[in-house]
Image (tube, rainbow, N blue to C red):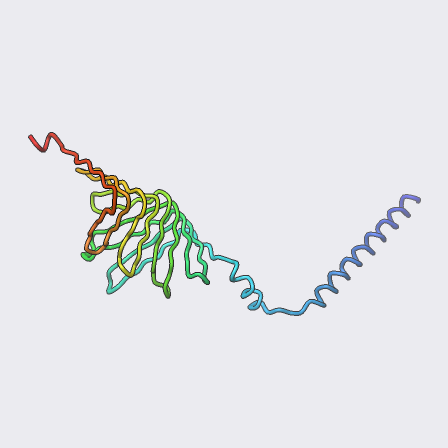
Length: 196
């Protein structure tokens, strides 16, 4: 009999506590002004980046692909008109529409100008593939307005017949003009089988 009274008393105390908590929650919700979902979204938008997995963006003009960007992960920041990408690959089609210049890196930043690619800055293990040449550097920038790739730091170029080390590089993409800007060291590879 005594246990039954203790259980009943405990049950009454728990019920009163739950009722009190419920009352306080209702009061705080009732007092808070109503905000539209649209208003809440606008407050959060500046701090929130859109995440895109397996990112891909392509520019097609007159039925011909001009450039394509893919990445394993992308974060879009609307206010800055900028996309931060992981493991990006930027492919630029040359004038003939058949040959390409391809850039890969660990990460990058893409700046947009009204939904059009303006600048791509690639950093970390940047590799540029141009015909039979492979160029490696730490940082490269592609400017769409000038159709130029620049790499200000150490550059290593390897090809079938040549190895080059230099400081600084400029590549005019469409005419395929490559300029090394300083401290150039070149090693020509001669195949004995071809010379005999």
